Amino acid sequence: MNFEQLMSQVSGTSTEKTAGDTNAQQSTKTATEAAQEALVASLKQVVSQEKTASVNSSDPVEALIKEAQRLAEDEKTGEVMHMRQMGAAFADAAAETWARQTSKIASVQPENTYEKTAAEEQAILHQAAEKGYNDTMTKVAMEAGYMQAMEKVAAEQYQAGQNAALEDVREKAAQEFYKGAQEVDVLLSQLKR
Image (cartoon, helix red, strand yellow):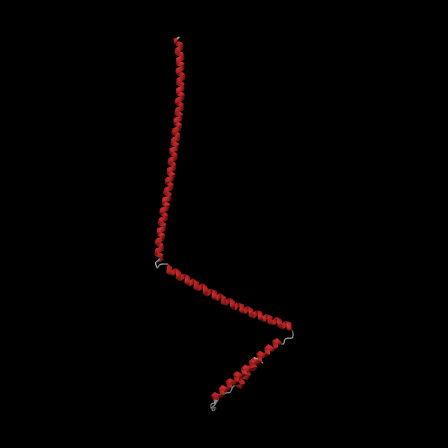
């Protein structure tokens, strides 16, 4: 039975209203009920024909393959629906966690966070500048002290070298003077003789 036959049955059982018919409402009601019953009966017939046609196939292997394919499609559809539900649940949980965390953060932070943060940043920058200045000055002072110390060591070594050179000169001068004095003594002693 096809759709056209169903429609012809439904339209054939309906009654038309006439002006002279006193039972028009009752006949319409019965006609509607009859049409519904005919439609339900024909649908049952069509469905039972499809079931028997698919069950009565000539090859049982083919019927088994078709049934397995239908079951696989149903299972895949079920898995897709399950994954959609899981995704929705995950998204709901993530959104709830996000809302909870943002409300916690909002309750912890004061109202004027921007102004306080800017003031804190200025204080931190000021501290950093002071520390950098102090570190640089300490380094410069250490380098200056090192340079002064090196100059002092160099001056001391220069003075020590100069003193050693003068001492050598004095010693040699003294030795030469002593030799000269001895020669003068020898000359004088020879002259006196």
